[in-house]
Length: 139
Image: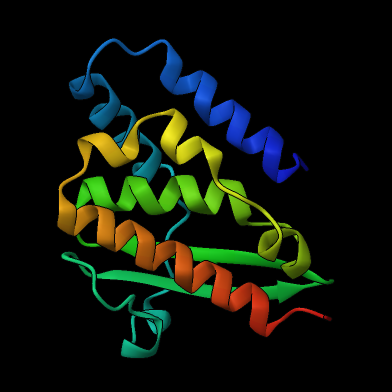
């Protein structure tokens, strides 16, 4: 399993060769399409991310001390955003997640090309993932 830093570096590399935001949007959409199918039984309000323009569900699962995340959204771009967060965080311990920083978001320029409402939604998704990690941490 790649470390959180290695996963971020991989995403940075993937976006580095893209010349415009249209290409970046396409990569995000493709990443969203690659998410595993979200369990229908988890499409409940308790898993909805508040404050997102789109409907976003994030469901955690703890296995052998590691958190795994299932996620889905009703829009392609938002599904891509949550896909990159799942790619970075899923399969790591709550402590690893809680102690990580997400440099890749600024490095690939997500903050620059997202609308204010999508930036707020991205922030809320990150906060939910961090909250799941904190609530399952041994510290």
